[in-house]
Image 1 (cartoon, helix red, strand yellow):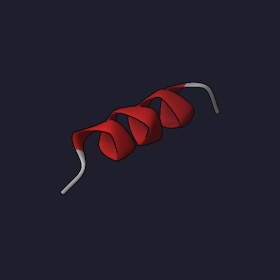
Image 2 (cartoon, rainbow, N blue to C red):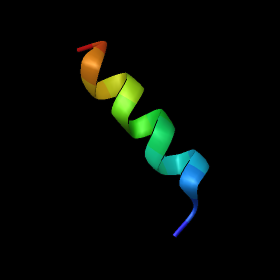
Image 3 (cartoon, rainbow, N blue to C red):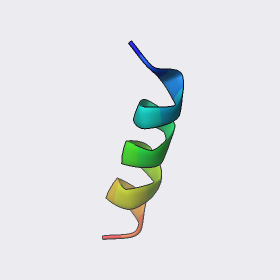
Image 4 (spheres, rainbow, N blue to C red):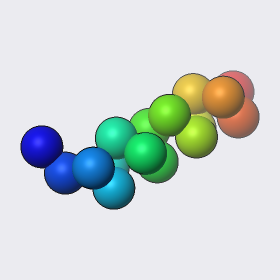
Length: 16
């Protein structure tokens, strides 16, 4: 599980 992908997914989720 790539940590970078999860980190970006969280950022986009907060940027919704």
